[in-house]
Image (cartoon, rainbow, N blue to C red; front, top):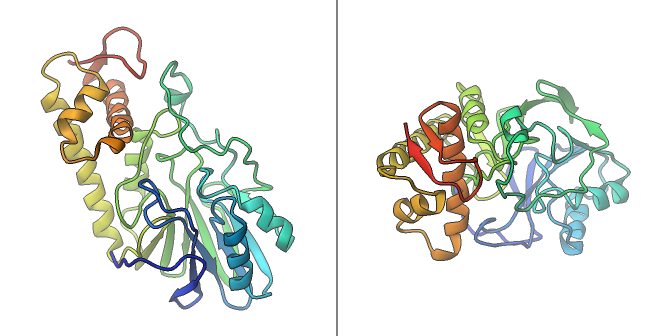
Length: 295
């Protein structure tokens, strides 16, 4: 991965036809902030306008520089990616495209879960004007951009392949593995989405946070291996009935205390996946504070 601390509000040219404008929303969950991309030369497409921030809107309009805006595309409807789509649409007259609203693409397993918590960072008001199904192709400055539905981080998450690039949103980031928090996040779907990306023709991934990923296929394989290692750790630690919080404390020993709740959600996602595969079972009802045992 190539990474540095870019300046917010400044259009960085990353490759021919690809500009990045960093939003001013750094945090432990967003790293330097959200990467908004402007794709194309004569006419442009904006990917992930970002959070509702007037300074970032002005920076995007400045980087667009009066060129026609073909598309505004949202990879997924979290508050750090989608809210500015509406104001940008108003400013440019371009409709907003995405896979669907925030509940779209959620698996049957996740739809049936009860008291499981979650909902972190969801943009409940998000409603795209145009739906982009899996496999759809749209013209972006004379070259096709292909939509790949990649549920996992969120049910409505998509990645976008254009020329030798793929814009990966939060499915594959340039600084850490993504948060998977049920029922919006689904580890079973996430692993399947990773497998679908292999092999990849992309020469670089352009993520929603962090630097450009220069070795796409190796990164995907490493991410799959990382999740399988985490699964092994959970099964190894599950020597007695334990909750997701218990396991997170035992496994994420180097994680700052403030990030342990996010780690707990990741562990819970693994436990739900392991439950559907018949490897573990909740004690009583499957809920966010349930104890789990190994089968």
